[in-house]
Image (cartoon, rainbow, N blue to C red; front, side, top):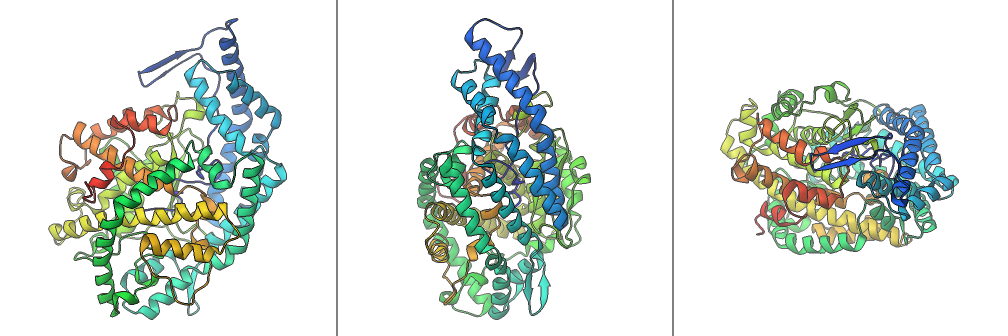
Length: 585
């Protein structure tokens, strides 16, 4: 499952992922990290390395003094805009981002930062902060007027997403109502109307999005990169060629099992709607982008959550593993209202414990999974990252790591044994488990193929923005999702996907995150629970929370994502654990 705003985690304020790349730290004398790394920075030495370390400390301290309040103001403004949808809130959000951008585009400061990085910093904690700051400042080393234009254009498009609702026969539908109709209606005509209405936002934002693509590419080329997609992966400490190679491997790995799973799904969808399988079109699937597994198997998963207090289950679950979320929920905005962002995300406002979730909860399996997901982001934040960690390092190691944490927690909404332990009454737990297991397997395959579309579309969109993007979109949908394009339709349906605006070059991290989730889950099953992964439950086991704190949270952003994966699981990120979950190895 993917949760926009997850942008999933994503408050798209700064940096490559749509997540704020948080800056620096105060001067410090001694800091111990993980009981593994102890770094002492006492006194000054005449040696060049020590002098450069002191230079790094001064830069970091001055940076934090200036940028930290701007960062927090931008986060708060982003939260207010997304919870209210008000014009003045979006204007304040734009102004806050402009102030932050102005501080980061200072060319003299960037020159000093570049010199510090070039002359090498001997203290590894300082060196890591300088590396992160260099990436953060690099993105802003373009004309400030161009930065303001990009912010204004993205802000305007985001506002349209937050305030536009699908409209059918004069009636506005919430996102949950759209999903409900696509899941339950047996009328192809009704489904098509609702699906087309859900895409209407694409036509409203397409022109502005194309202008934004041009501006983003202009900024990337000013920094010496071929296009904005290449730049964004670089800023996320990734390489486009490496990511594409991995996705090519995933394509081969998933192609055949996906085709088998989709054939079974298509047969049931066609039967439910009274059409032939060759007549199936995008509106016959159960979500607007076919990124989730259609609920076409024996059990109605949503029925289990009728009357269930989703927040109560979340509180009890996270409390039981030693990662309480009461403070997060108390600060959150959790139910539907006009003007509010219709999706979900988690945001760390100040890196001092003010962590919040935006959601639009209704009692069904989708929102049970979504809340487990978003709270998975929330516990991997300043709620549990050590307070003594320098500010720039007081965040998740990488966007794929926080996505992985969220995805690992989300899986339990489809486990009958988890639900029963949480006190949820199921009519037929065995039937629920059989259906949910098949849906879970299909979700991994379906979402993997959907991410192929998103990665390759964004790559080509930025590389060749003047091509027919409508055609490119459906060529990729046809190739990777095996969904036939609607006859005669020539609409910018790609532009109806909010991530393309608010979290550019982010989507591939969902699949990498899922790989991380599977790898960490298997490690916990083996090392903590001493059981087979298929039987592993976290309920009431505080050793799980202890593992997560020690192996993942306590490192903050001290290590690169692959170093963090090795420290958490004992090996680099690999597709093996992911593939095992749908029986490919």
